[in-house]
Image (tube, rainbow, N blue to C red; front, side):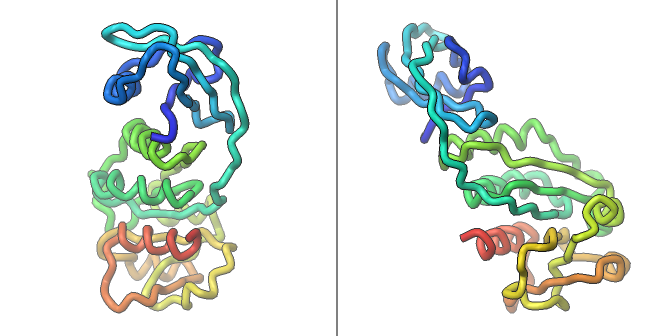
Length: 218
């Protein structure tokens, strides 16, 4: 753990319970010990001292705060909705690499019964940030279709077999990754700009988005 999360971090006094407290118990934290706590919104790291421990939580007093250098990109990726369990397993990797925003949309081949629990996704991101040290939360948006997405983001480019080599990508477009089954013909016709991957095999949706993020950011 690089730090613990609390939305109350920056206040003079805070109380940690739930998973944060369980982590303190696991590391056998003691009175007087100082720990890093962040709220993932203000760009700071807050140093607290443990002043009280009971069976259900810990009370901490703020000692000082300092700025944390921003290390993340401004990369936004569009991702057609797939099985939420797949998205949940993939998010930590995207978060660690520094993806700034994911714009979800329902492709024609997305299963429309898939619903995303953004509160759960945020909890997954918080846990990932605690582990990797990222100091802000990835942002999310969601649209009902590719057509609706393109209305808000006219600079969308599809990741598709017929596209240009991604080596020529200059960061001007938002890259859209399709669901399992890819994009429909009508979706391909709706978006002129396309980039392709050099992989010889068919990639799963989560493999494609992780590979693209890695190629651009790492």
